[in-house]
Length: 87
Image 1 (cartoon, rainbow, N blue to C red):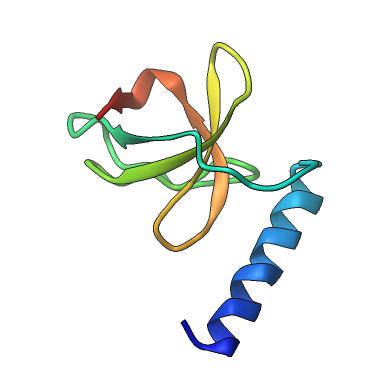
Image 2: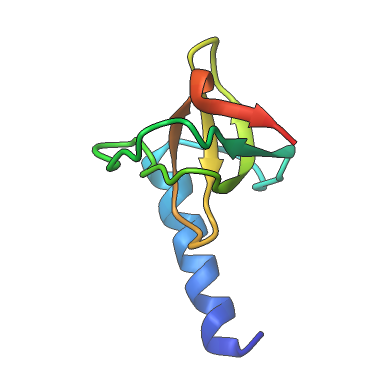
């Protein structure tokens, strides 16, 4: 990883912590997959855009309806639990 990429990741992590009021270090709890049968959805507000079969890193289980996740492009957002499958 180059220095430029490392700084870019650090910046996106700081923006995530500010936007979602997340305290502490960002730890991946587990990985889950978006249900292949779900229709693709655009993200809006704090929701993460969804693609069928995409593998997401779970950052926090926020409540019974949503999970805070990160995708492969290092974008953060909420995802409905109903569309997630365990690996």
